[in-house]
Length: 579
Ligand code: C2E
Ligand code: MG
Ligand code: MG
Image (cartoon, rainbow, N blue to C red):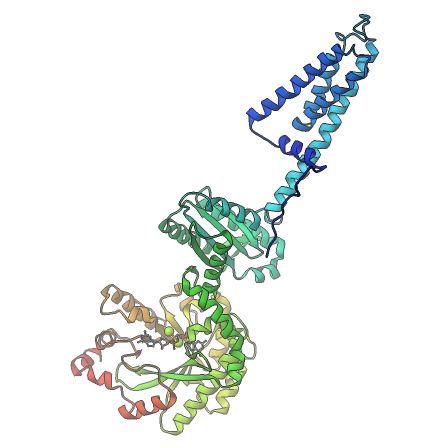
């Protein structure tokens, strides 16, 4: 638990200096005028006191140091000098040395006093000016990140707490994490990446409402505090920010792409600043685990982020203890209905949670080296299964999902070739599926890595095509033989006719690049008929078959004798139109 600092009660020695320093930093002109009048009045009063007490030769003249030092402390060195000169003149030529005897002062005496007053005022003023400068610096350092110059977490908490005290606060708390900043740190050094952080903050500040606070809370994370914004305005602002961050930045004259993930929450009046930070943090972790670029906090985030951390922690054990299972989803040739292949999809039979779907652990595993043993396991079991089926007269192509992280492992290609040899599987019948989004994160690097596999006659498929912002400039260069249309376009093909021209265009792009086009997510006969008529080569989806256990698939395949019953059920008319 954090302890708040409470000053001790009772009189303290530093009470007066603290008050004086605080008064000296007051900027309100009215206050400063007031303080100035106090100093002048004190000087006049003391002059009168000296006169009443008998004149300048008596000790009361020393009391004039008080307003001079006060002026120096409150208004800086020049004011100290000025107060010294005024004090020197007030106690100077017109003030008798002895009032009773009407004895005037010697010129040297009052001049000497004036110089001493002015010097004291100047020196005290200089000392306090330096003290004020240092206090300002320490205060700034306590509220800012010294490297980037951006506000830090202390200032963020302070502003957030203030915003929460407003009646009906409308606040958005946004965390922006730079995923590839460590790599950039390694290449350019951390000073350069701090420059990059400043560039990011500047770009954001230019487009965000003026009262927005952009803070650096960790080396690779910014927090944006949006105040006075409705839910809709926050969403609009973040869509803009997300797009703005996608534009390249510049480091050492090189354009640099920043991989960002955004998590945010809207803050309500009953939340504390700590709770709000925790919620935004969880939304960010959720976005990272689920592979989303932006995510708003909801109740799921609490559960899922904790769950995925726990699942990730026990994944290695799950592989070793054989808790993973493979299901196979058939893929058919749309021109003749034959079952041409299967896609291997992993499931986790968890001892306490039951069946765990891949989206609950794969995206998190893909961010770690755990994806390597996982993919090794899937490849081994899937090839072993297909080898067994081949012995049973079921000769199929096999599609396995892989992650770009697998490709970065220099042993990956060798491991696949060893497995192909062990299970006597034709490399031309193995398809490695990589999602379009993953491919496009660093297309040049992926193209190079895929070239190696392609040279060994392995097929590469772009999975979930249509969702990953491919550039046409890259597609024709990718050594890819299969393009899988994302199921979000196929599932609603009949209910949302506006999707049809998009799917038609994807089929055309695939064919223009000499790729076979597979539609995944076929959920009804009408969609299959439409795809058949529009030249799609292959199909996969719940309407043909859900993913099945190995035994389930074998039984299903044998029951229809290798030709999809659903395809046959389409009727000759449709099939004829397609062919
Ligand atoms: P994916 O590779 O695009 O696989 C297709 C997903 O869509 C599967 O979900 C499948 O069950 C589902 N699906 C198939 N047909 C239909 C349909 O007609 N309608 C609907 N609504 N869904 C359909 P699943 O098995 O949950 O897998 C989800 C994703 O997890 C996969 O998407 C893939 O990206 C990933 N994944 C699965 N297994 C592996 C694996 O072994 N390794 C890696 N790296 N990723 C895997
Ligand atoms: Mg796939
Ligand atoms: Mg897919």
